[in-house]
Length: 37
Image (cartoon, rainbow, N blue to C red; front, side, top):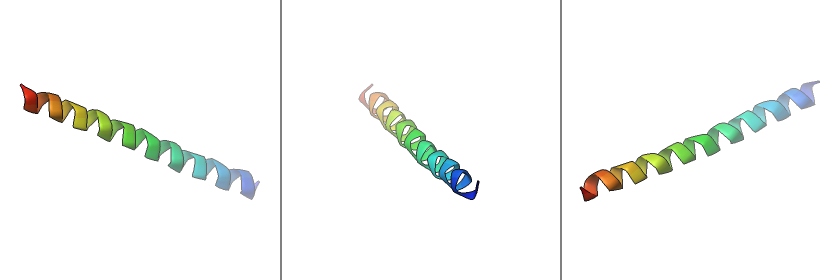
């Protein structure tokens, strides 16, 4: 039980990190597009 719970939390943190990275990339793209115009 403890093992599975730890694995779930680890998976959540990895998923959240990838989501955050994607969000940051999109934001940087928007910033660049805004700077161009």
